[in-house]
Image (tube, rainbow, N blue to C red; front, side, top):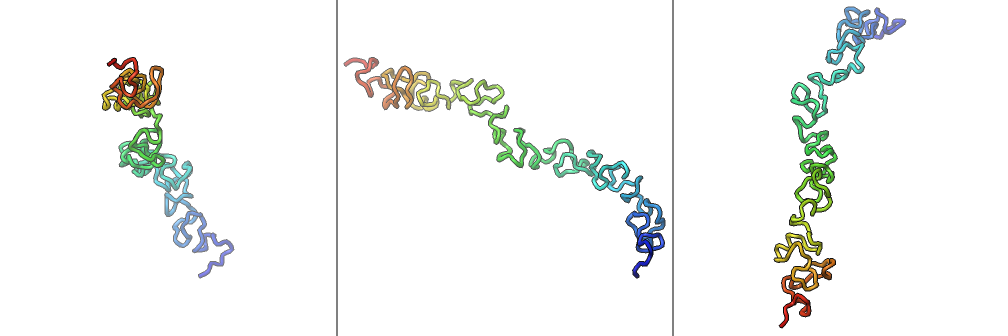
Length: 222
């Protein structure tokens, strides 16, 4: 039946809500008390609508269990999808979920959601201290030149110690001297890069001083 009260929220109007507690007067045993029948109703100052232990009147968001209590058991303080009560470390989004978007699984400073490879500390941060940017086997934080594979490891296979264009590994395979750009001393560099002691090669016979130049000083006479 339609309410015809002067005020639809008057206590005498069954469908009204005189105390504004969300319960119609007809069903409210105390329609002048916002805490009855629901002691935790939001309008009830002493109630706790979100069950976070903070009364409604001092709770900045009485619909959010994490405000103002991020450590509440049912809250997820680190936003990793695991409630605090079940989370061994509720300040770390990687525990117990290392694959969580907000986590930085490889510790490179980039969260998983923006990291193309969250198992590689060098992606997308090749300059990260724990990374080896130049691939010489020495982490950046102890490498004096993390863009030079020869520092601090001149014997590294990928280094070109003598600067002739051949890596140490290639020189080892060819049987040439990784520390001498012109192994046979015929004036032609072992590799395709020229240096002070020889012209750019590559030398077709890097261990034969008579090839390609039979007149080379290093070529024995006769």
